[in-house]
Image (cartoon, rainbow, N blue to C red; front, side, top):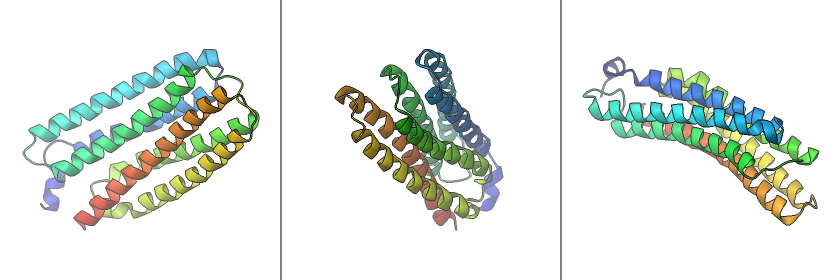
Amino acid sequence: MGIRNRTQGPNFFEFFTQQANKLVEGVEILSHIYAASPEERIALRDQLHGVEHQGDELNHEIFQRINSSFITPFDREDLQSLASHLDDCMDFIDEAGDMLVVYGIAGIPEQIAHLLDEQIAVIVHCAELTAKNIPALKSPVDLRDYWIEINRLENEGDLAYRRTLTTLFDSGLDPITVIKLKDVIQSLESCADAFEDLANVIEALALKES
């Protein structure tokens, strides 16, 4: 497979860029959900579902074009993996927003709320960094700074995750609320993990293409 194939056939890179931009849109809504009142969260959650649905449609379109294209810029399995991991990031963002609404959690202690904000900030940075770098995917070997920074952010997210859990378990909240908040905290950690998994896929692709 030569470099010449990168610009032939369907513009997969444009679809990947659209997927990455949906991640930025999704995490912005997610951050609003966590800052909103329980009453306001429902409408925001519905907006997030809409963005997630748009991401699903993009993912389906990419898979259809992969299956119907004679020429692809990378191996079909690599394109499918990229699309799936971008979609996974969106799914976990949607889950993190939905869980807060489904559990009907209100009155989160300020200290825990602050730590949740730290977890969300990591996810926001991961989404923005992904959207910024995905357009350069035609040359994955040039994205080394991207996957290194994503890995650093995920480590930062791990620290925030552990601090939040420790604070939650020491909070003295009733057991049911602790269980609900633990699930919420875990869902945010899963978001950060999904971005790291995506970065690892891109790193592996770069090694393959170098």
